Amino acid sequence: MQEKSINILGIETSCDETAAAVVADGRIVKSSVIASQTKLHEKYGGVVPEIASRAHIEKIYPVIAEAIARANVTKDNIDAIAVANQPGLTIALIVGVTAAKTLSFAWDKPLIAINHLHAHLQSAMLSEEKLQLPAPLEVPIKGPLTLQGDLLLTGPAVALIVSGGHTCLYDYRSPLQPKLLGHTIDDAAGEAFDKVATILKLPYPGGPSIEKAAEKGNPNAIKFPRSMLGRDSLDFSFSGIKTAVLYYCRGQDMKGENKVDSMSARQIADIAASFQAAVIDVLVKKTQRAAKKIGARTILLGGGVAANNRLRTALQKMSDSDVPPKKLLVAPKQYCTDNAVMVASLAYYKFKAGLFADLTLEPKASG
Ligand SMILES: Nc1ncnc2c1ncn2[C@@H]1O[C@H](COP(=O)(O)OP(=O)(O)OP(=O)(O)O)[C@@H](O)[C@H]1O
Ligand SMILES: [Mg+2]
Image (tube, rainbow, N blue to C red; front, side, top):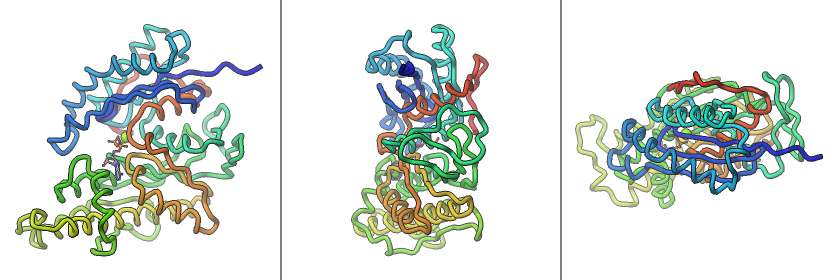
């Protein structure tokens, strides 16, 4: 007899997207609703926490209602409520956490707390049609993962999360307990894209703007620094490259005006392409280094910057040519930036493992 499927309602409000989704069995997306606040933050060139929080309050109920309606389910066939409670902007997270706790209490459904970064990582697992995640997990997992389906993760995978606030490498042996191998010591990769876009006076959000401008530029035009932080380091640093772009645009003494206004579109494109190439170079080399260190045969890529085509192609090239070659799993584009599908998907594995939260759940800025 076929087992009844598990429907989880996922809620995401960690930054500037109010999102809800219903996902069955961790990978059948029944609905995904996202209310983006990009327009509200555009004129400030970055996310303003108070504005984000107010917008979440306005949108959270209609977004959840829409996700449930589109999934064609009722509260009776929802098995659990999952919410990203860390890391993120506390005054944004609290809106989703409060909504999830309220529904959990009112509907008498189990509550599941999700780490937003682990959810980004989970989105990479949504890429593989044939891949089925490990069956109900006991944590911690020791030894090789045995997966059903065609793909076997024999041994650990390396997961690279590149987002607006984080750049992390993980040793991934279980969806429930990725182990941090390295992270950025200053700016996140997405943050660097956003800040360099501001320097170049490109539209917000910066990542897609830089990628678009870079299409017409020469990635070898300017040699921006690639900070590797020593031979064995798996940490990242992107503040130096951001400063290098600023120096390039304002002169070494920083006394000059930002010369961007007098630059040609071609010059801007060259800066964007050279900056993008330097960031991608570091991301790819560090991922390769991490894979070698832990003997990984699989690489996972997720987070907003994973939407970047150049990064996807460069990681694919490295994965194919590395010795031994690696299997690359990249988050589908619609699940790279914040969404609730990744929350509900990861929650399935917590549900199966019986890892529930209670009504004392709080939002946490770090994680
Ligand atoms: N095509 C792209 N190329 C490069 N960067 C991109 C692209 N698309 C989006 N980004 C960047 O991704 C980031 C947003 O990603 P995401 O939504 O995952 O971040 P966040 O949720 O704000 O941060 P975090 O997940 O760390 O809390 C922004 O910095 C944005 O500029
Ligand atoms: Mg995010």
